Each structure stands twice: as structure tokens, then as C-alpha cells.
Image (cartoon, rainbow, N blue to C red; front, side):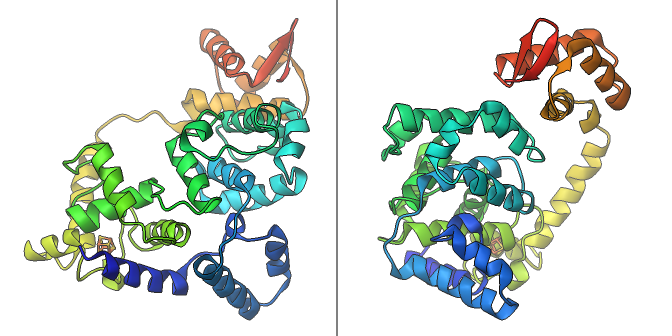
Length: 341
Ligand code: SF4
């Protein structure tokens, strides 16, 4: 595909429809201002924020990038927004976070789920302050040594904080490239992950890694979505291989073909047995942490509360859940008392 065309089309779309998100702002104070001003002014702020990605060389704080990326790993943007703001207000810098107790971070994490991420952030802050003298590493290899930072998050820091021209390969971006360039769904493309990453890296326009990755992320979240892509209004509909090939097969667009396939898959799936979330270990682990956020508990009383309120009636399973929380370093047990670590 013609890269120049791809850049022109997606950047034009991004300037018009890009999202305003606090971790993208030059200063968080701009966000607080945005809350107090009128809708017209918010749109002016959005336009100027997006324009700044294209015109200014500036660094965002790697700390806020990592906090937002960890929060976003398994939680939707709408739920992350208020938690991100209050987290950053409480610990505005990595130094502040490094001084906090893990139990405080776990309390603040309430509502986000997957509590291990709070522990990772806490460990990351310690490592940056004590091992790296307060400076975030600047290579992918070093960044990945930090707790909770995998390939995706390291690349996000490199491009969003340091302006490196590399791809940030999240599920949205993987999906867009799979459809637009290969006419398939992510995971069905016949090339290795390394080759796929190379295609994504090569697509990054020079000096514009930051807005390019943001544009792709927004495009994947708002237009080329997983289940119901909006091919009808998509600015890439005339060049997207998935769309063109399904049109050749008689479908109106790729979205219609995908809906037909998904319908068949859902019929098959409805026969399969699925464990309800409220019976999963993850659910009970979350409930234990929720209870401990209000203070330490006697082990037996804690079990009785989980048994009564959340219907966990299996002492062996209870033991495994408590053990897994201990192994993950989220809780501490002293005698018969359990508390957040
Ligand atoms: S035409 Fe449809 S599948 Fe192709 S990029 Fe646009 S939204 Fe995605």
C-alpha cells in the first residue's frame, strides 16, 4: 500500500476525530482547565493538543505514560480516566510513588481490577528511583527490565515520551494492519511476529512516531473496531484489502462479512460451557483485596465474609486463592491476621 496515502488519510482523520486523553497532554493542568471550560473551548483545546503532536518537539513524562499504559492494559478507557487523574494527583512523580506504601497504592487502585498491576507500578517506581537514580531508562531493553513493562509498554514510552519512530503494537494497531494490508484478522496473517512488527515499524512516518501511533490507536478504537468496524464511514474503505476482497465476494463491505462470520461463531459458542465471572478465582481474589482495602482482617472472619457475601464455599479453593495472593505479594499474613502487603 502507498504509505504516503495512508499517512495523509489517517492524519486527516486524526486531526478531526482524535480523542482528548489526559495522558496525552503536555501538562496535566490543561486537563483540569478543560473540565472547567465550555464545550467549544474543549474542542479548541483538543485541536491544539493534537496539533502540538505534529508541530512541537516535546517530551511527555515517561512516568505518566507507564501509569496510563498499565491502567489501560486490562481496563477500558472510560474507567481508567478518573482513576488516572486521581492517581497522578496523589503521586505526581515517580519519586512520590516510590515513597508510597504498597497498601496505599492498592487502596488507590480500587475499581481497576487486576491488582497485580498496582504492585508492578510500585516496584517500577522503586527501581527507577533507587536503581536508575530517578531517570527512566531510554532503551527498550532497559525499560523492559522494569516491573510490568513488556514490549508494548516499552515501545509506548519510547515513542510517546522520547519521540522514537517505532510502532506501538497494541491490539488495535495489529488489527488495523492485518485488515488493511493483509485482508485478514489479527492472528491469521501468514507472517512471523517479527516480520509483522517490521511492517508496522516501516509504516511510521519519519519524525511523527508520536502522532502516528496515537492516530492508529484512536482509529482502531473508534472506526476499525474488533466486532463492528465502521467500514461505511471509513476513510480507508477504498484501499483496505479486507474491505475490497469481501466486496468481491458479494458483501456490501468487510463489516457485513464479519458480522455474518461472528453470528456463526456465536451460535457455536452458545453451546459451550463458560464459567461465570462471579465464580472465577479472579473474582474472589478481587473481593479479598476489596475487603482488605478497609483494613486488616482475621483470616477466618475474612473467609466467612467471602463465603457469605460472595458464595465461595470451598475451603481448599479458598486456601489456593489466599496462597496465590501471597505469592503475588499483594497480601501479608501475620499470625491469623491478613492485610494488604
Ligand atoms: S474498511 Fe473497514 S476493515 Fe477496512 S480499515 Fe476501514 S473500518 Fe477497518
